[in-house]
Amino acid sequence: MPLGAYGIRLSGLDGAAELLVEVEPEAPAYEVTSEVGRTEAEAEHVDDGAALLRLRSGGDIRISRAERRVRFRIPHPVRADELVHPYLAPAAAVIARWMGRESMHAGAFTAGGDALGIVGTREAGKSSTLAYLAAQGVDVLCDDMLIVDGDRPVPGPRSIDLRADAAERLGAGESIGMTGARERWRLRLGPTDGAAVLRGWVFLAWGDRVEARSLPGAERLARLAAERGLRLPPARPEALLELTSLPAWELSRPRDWASLPEAADLLLELASARPTGAA
Image (tube, rainbow, N blue to C red; front, side, top):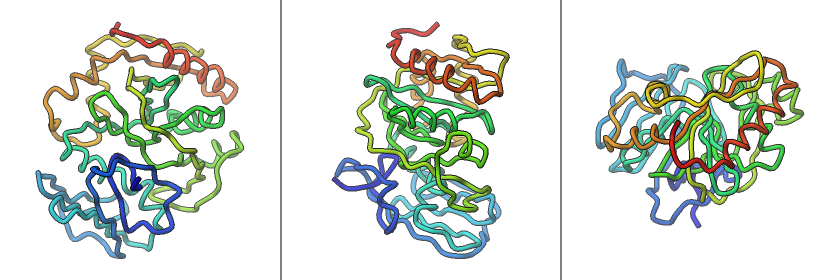
């Protein structure tokens, strides 16, 4: 089976094979290249054949659908593993749109063949929660960009990037230095079969105790719309409605590392509930 991530066959990433997953032979194949430099573009654009995305570092990503190429221009040299994660995620969202798929700024894990999407704003504990689950043997599908093909979440790169305090508390990850906009400690993930069905969403929050609150439809729609991978209309108009029809919860816990095991147990309970309708 060919290797890639986010449902895309990838080439040009020699030295980063351990971060890739097996993808279907018919998956679209893209060559990834990089060069040192700063962007000359003043604005971003995405259409049905090409995309130009600006990077906060001062570089850009140029994606050609016809040439099947993703080209990064970054002000400093980057390794292949850095291109796979975190730089590839926005390009994956564009290619997913061309494939008629939806993308979300979210992670995901599986339990018993069911998957939950995990959504958290900056410093909401998403990556540390997923890293804790991975340490317990849970299959983590992705960390920061979730591509959904119908009702199936597509596996992302096999790593979770942690901040220093999370890596120290969890005793996990190895320092890979400054990557993207921050210093990272990388936890390598094991293989995944990618056969889970997406059953719902969990939005992480801080609170006084560990608890889960079911979200009504209007709140689900507003929250998911705010976390879409691209600020463009869905490739399929019904795609977002399909995702918001799934049950969703807000899971809150204290800002205390001691609360993480209880919150993780509650996440696994929600994943194994096999809900059939939304509250």
